[in-house]
Image 1 (cartoon, rainbow, N blue to C red):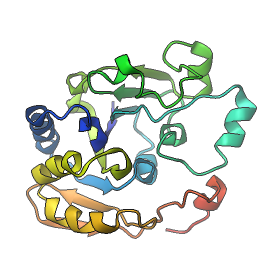
Image 2 (cartoon, rainbow, N blue to C red):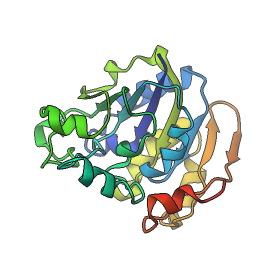
Image 3 (cartoon, rainbow, N blue to C red):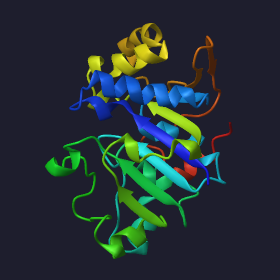
Length: 227
């Protein structure tokens, strides 16, 4: 079993628990796995899809970032367009037969504002879950449900549109990249921001020459971009 751990820093927007945040990142750093860092969540898709032998996606996130559809035709036409921050989970290439586990903070489920698609409940309606093409779709509150032994790749997104500087700063401080991120945040809306790899306790940040897909491109146009 291999799992991808996706972390959206907006998880701590309304659950600003510093101790919880620090303890969580201690567990993440203890894995000694390079962390792929992006600004927006849909920018993680390329990195996630590079791991075609994985079978579980954990998404630590205030929002579930998945939608469903009326039927197969609706799905196929929707997925012709590039992934967005609210539906990028639908674009994971190895989703068929795999498990998607959303890890929301306390309160996100109760208030229902963490659901990106309230018209199609993928957690309670088997039809809508099947149309996502995931083997299973679940939500489990809090990081204690993560099997850290299975984690083989990690991605972090800053999500400035859904966070405050304080929300972003605290985890970045733990990662030792707060100064770099603060400089970048002055122009965080740059569409073509290049993700980088962060390695904990080693001052190594490697810029990656890979495309970051523009929101207005179709999915097929994105796939045609050469790396």
